[in-house]
Length: 364
Image (cartoon, rainbow, N blue to C red; front, side, top):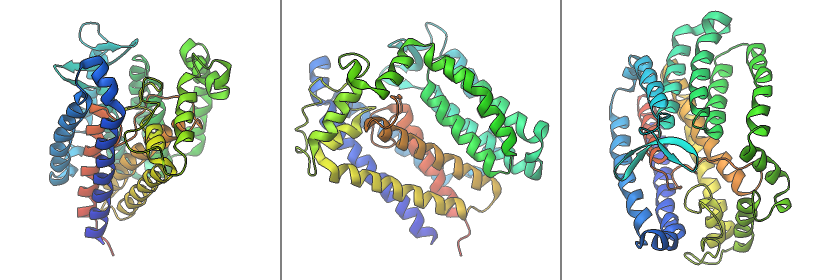
């Protein structure tokens, strides 16, 4: 059972990564030639991210992940420091009004991805140490929520509401599973609704995204453009698609075709069969992840695996939901498939830790 689960989750990951390599080249080659005079520009960068990700994934597979407990707080402090530094002009890189990246020559690093992992490790360690005291407000509920609040505040300042919602949802589910009183969780959710309202409806571009989600045709050349083009791509693919490499929406119609909306390009070129295959692969990944969670050897391993699987699953659900017009536009990539250095690398690291946990789990 151990070997089967590890092979399954590794195999699914490899298939998704391979799909990503093919689709990134297909979706980005024309844009890359137009902008950089090199049709392989994004593919070569993605392969460099893949090489780094593979090395770190195998490192995560082989190290004693229990030592993460010892470094949970230092890792969290480093990630918070990086979240502060990225906001400083001249240190953090600004793209389209967002300051989310450090730039090192051809590699960009997004500290919020490290923060996601750091928070999951910290909360998993905290829950494993506190045990039954998780039902206590001061000793069990307040510390992880305070850490989450600081992290989310810094990520919101970048600004990045999508990542904030994702990590917040993951931590709250972890706390719920750990036995935290639903009254505490519910009170925070209800108390955050006014702030969420202000963050969405008092910020013009976010308000435009919500209105575009409700009725994209009200502004088809403005805020509704991405959603409309995404749905056109998915609809024009039909059952079998227009053929690999023959997408028309990637011809400067659909923005971010190789990143946030790569699922739409898959739907156009490979049709319903291609998108269904991708969805099934993610379902298989999640099911194998649940097996690892269920058979984790200890409480820390259980909640670490839970947090990692939840983060990958949420990003996949949100990205696919946005592409299909079922959710408002968020800047979250499709795990293992979208072009995106930091997110892609940390997804592979997460898989490495999951395989490591599966290797040490005691299966019947």
